[in-house]
Image 1: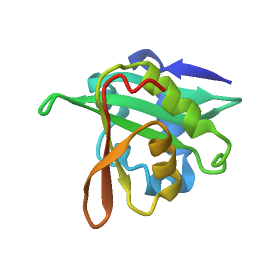
Image 2: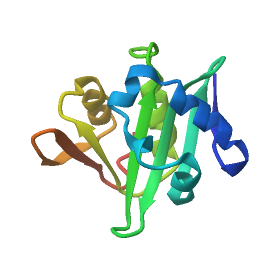
Image 3: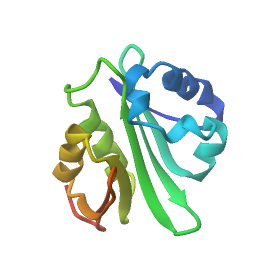
Image 4: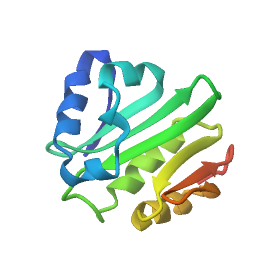
Length: 140
């Protein structure tokens, strides 16, 4: 198992992953309104977790309007519960020492548990979404 850093030269690998995530697209909607080519231009890092094929994804996205860094993560359908999300989270957190934000569907209890394990805490909630933040240098 290895991580592949995504850039414009291997973007087709990311495109293939996005098209293969199955029901995971219901929770991971990041690419529903943007293309991989334009999205990664704002990313600090973009990784795919590769076994024999890509099974997971993660990015840190700099929102220039707010200067906040947002985390996005997805584990492909059929690969849940095997620790891949935690591997991706660790890789992303090790890639950036500043404050990190994320949003998660309120009913995605598995993901919320993983985020809390990595010292993310809730700072805002809506009817459907929980917003979480991880402070600088939390040190996991």
